[in-house]
Image 1 (spheres, helix red, strand yellow):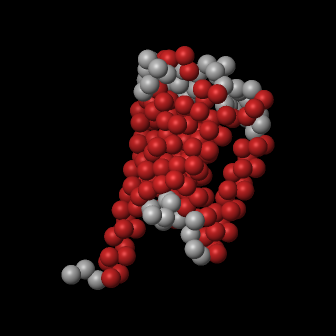
Image 2: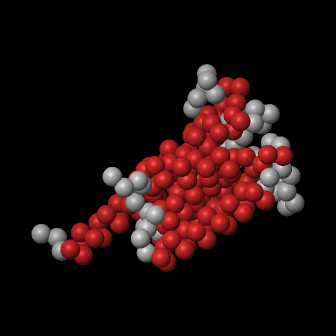
Length: 201
């Protein structure tokens, strides 16, 4: 018979593995896809094609338009994975993050003038939102305060990006244009799905 300590550690390992698996599915194919010059036209999000090529809602996260774009998103992805593991998010949180993945791109239909989109950043914002909701729903004050701090910083970032102004933003130091709306659609999808998944039964 396993000890109670073993029984407590086992779900934590499963939770971390589930969160890490979602992160790996997001990050590792992006490295492979970046090596292919023909991948972007087939995999990137294009609102005009979502009905006939719905896979783009998943594959768009693996498309990166520059090496800087890829490296920044990979670093951000590792941080989100570490954040979820450190916060000991449950398996249902990982499911919420995975479900927010395609919904992040579908949210971009609100701005059809964004003719194409690729990158991990929208879904990474979803992961941060999921972690914030997990912490906010816990009973201890410390977790709630941390969750509130993460949610506040995330909300400030999203609002400062003014996604309603247009489909693209040109930021100093970046060699590509950024789509701020993707960050907002990802965060909203992640927060809503985490809240639904973690409701007390």
